[in-house]
Length: 228
Image (cartoon, rainbow, N blue to C red; front, side, top):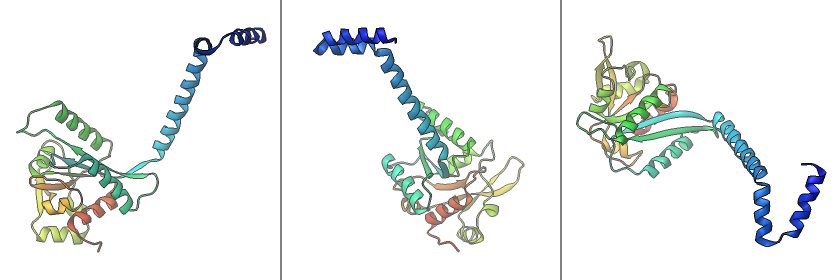
């Protein structure tokens, strides 16, 4: 805008009052308001992206087909885990509650979305531990080696105790080899961490898990075992 144009606009504004003046400002300067708004939004997006880039998931838990749980309580639990496991400012825990489809259930928009979400989160290494009914955990691994070998992953004190108590469930991998894949847990052990109900609950450690230390710490919490 030239000085002459600017002076002309000032003269017009000086002759307007009240609502007419406001309407004129909004009409004439609308494009400047739009540019300013876009600039503010762009800055907010950039700041948010920078902050999110600093954040790092240190443990991810997927809970499938639990009942009688509160989503707000699940959110509180992941915050509690981050605090009690000693995570830093930009480290966090992820707890995802999903209603996953089974052979006996009807496919719904919700269960299909849950299935897609779990597959995606596992693929991008956002899930370390899956808590689900035994039949469901087994179905996950029917065509893909979903879980790792617990005998190679777990510390000796945890594995020995689980083996002695008969709480290890085996699976057969794609090469036809049988390996220890799932841990039977009790309803009481589940509820000690998060108030929920589940039939025949088991825990499996996802094959591409990258957060071994924190996953084992959480497993010790479930089992009530101190670090040896």
